[in-house]
Length: 102
Ligand SMILES: [Zn+2]
Ligand SMILES: [Zn+2]
Image 1: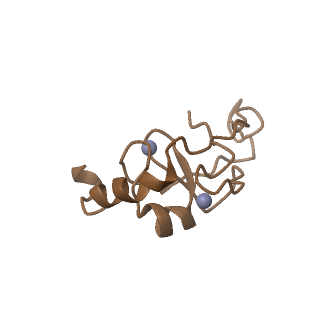
Image 2: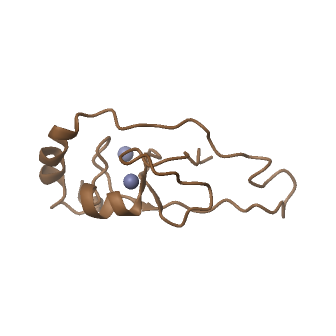
Image 3: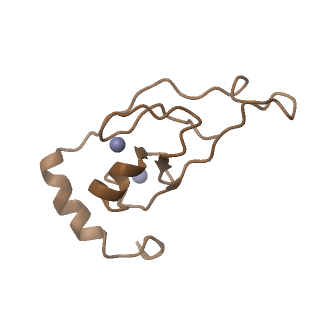
């Protein structure tokens, strides 16, 4: 189950569960669309993978036990663990490779 992390790892912007601008990699590293486009160039700084839009968990319990209230979003904020001065080099080495070939 997706953790639905509460913030962008790069700029720390709030990304509530219904944020249309939340992006995730396969490991659920979570960033805002702005950072993915302008800073990360679709390269996850943690794993080198690409990003997709994070799905939105329904608020309404349309099936028993399945809703945002029953399966709440994570409240643990995550911050980037890499030195930002080395990020450009990492991203440059990966961004030219399509995600399907990384
Ligand atoms: Zn951001
Ligand atoms: Zn990642």
